[in-house]
Amino acid sequence: MGYDHGAVPPFYASRWPTGMQQWARGNLGWKRSPSAAVDASLCGEGPRVRLCWLEDGAEPDITHAATLVLSVATDEADLERRIAAVQEPLTPEVHGGGFRSYTPEDGTYEIGQGDPASVRITFPPDEHERTVRLRHYRRKTDPRHRGGVVATVDGQVTRAQLMSEGELTDDICVVMEMSHRNDSVDDVIVSAVLKTDAPTTIGIDKVPGIQATYQSEIAGLDLQRRAGNRRDIAVWSSRNKERPELELDLFSGAVHRWTNHGQTEPVLWEMPMAWFLSCGISRHHYCNTNDTFEVLENGPERVRLHFSGTNPNRRARSRTWLTIPGDHPRPRIEVRMRMEVEEQWEGANVEFSDIFPYPSRLVETWLHDAVLFMARGGSTLIYNLRPDCSAHSPAKGDPGPHLFYGLFAADHGNVLAFFENPQHPGTPFHYSVCGNYIDVHVNLHPERDPVPAGTVFEVSYAAELYGDGSTSADEVRAIGERSLEAGTLVI
Image (cartoon, one colour):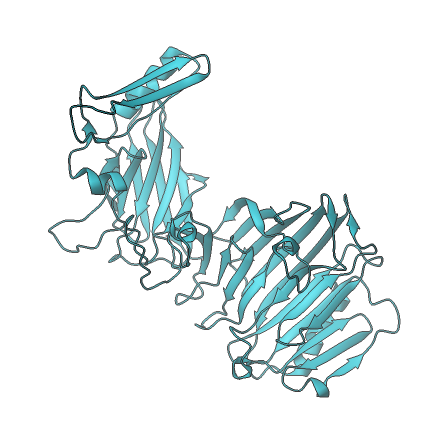
């Protein structure tokens, strides 16, 4: 069985048993009965499985608690090979960990963490050339790892899926939220095709760097979010072992809790990463109903993600490519965004960036002093608590395709951002600080309202967390001037 409850300490499981394991009470199998039957066959419509019970059978309770594998192949020899592979699991040789079990429910080989930095799992030559699925797990009492993870098959780097089991109960019958914490990797999941003529070795190394980890249990008020559908991603870095660098919520299409190196409190609480109508009042104004998500690269040098979604009426699509470097001296994100109007966009603007530095509108939580916007030939300085003292120096000519802003100065970090507008000069940037809260808007005002189908908007930007409470307006202005001169963020 792929779980580790037992009488020998530590008692804490690396995860709860599956529902089948919990409720079969040790009696796994297909119970033979005159009142129940299972039939698998090929018919004109394709493979079919029929599970039949007599309504008034002689037995009061019929329980089937076992694995049903339906395998479809192009020829009988291939089918026989797959059946044999399921029925004859292998025993790997493990260095740096422990082989716990083969779990038939999902065909996974369970390997427990031993050496916290490295493990090697070697499978013997396999005449069936099966695809093995391996789960390298960390018990709750084992050391955590906050950096990069490198998986290899016979020395060649392969992709791995990183998961955290979280700190919430996943009992299938109990809706109960325990202490919530988006944490670093618990499980490294790797798949590999075994060779017929030689052993196959899978390696997993935990190294300095960066990781993006699915959160299999996440905090939320509805059962859809608590059902383990892994829609939160926490990005951890070796540079901060106390908090994730940031979290990406695919339900809202937003970055949450972007945190500076060495800090525990975030500099930004939320940063939407999908196109929307500024100050929209309807779900149709937000293109964050995501239907596509990809981990393009998962450390150790960088994390690259892509996700895409529409508004509920599917009139426009938002695409986002997000890169988080792991070897940069400061927390940094690099973003490219594209909006495709598929039917019609009804609105006077299309917004792509709106940062929320604070968890509430209470003035005592506003820690920064001001926001400085700069474009070619002009600047605007807006003070958070004294907007009446703000200063504006308009550009006398073309403001150019670039925009810089800096939110400063606070002890836990400041935000510097640099934007590039491919639509310039036809559709220039518009920017502002919200009138009732210190969130910073950057958007485009299309030439036509409503925006017709076929219209495309693109933008790219980089943002970094920089400095502390001593960072001055002159320092931020100097960074803005250098960046506008170079056409890229220069710190």
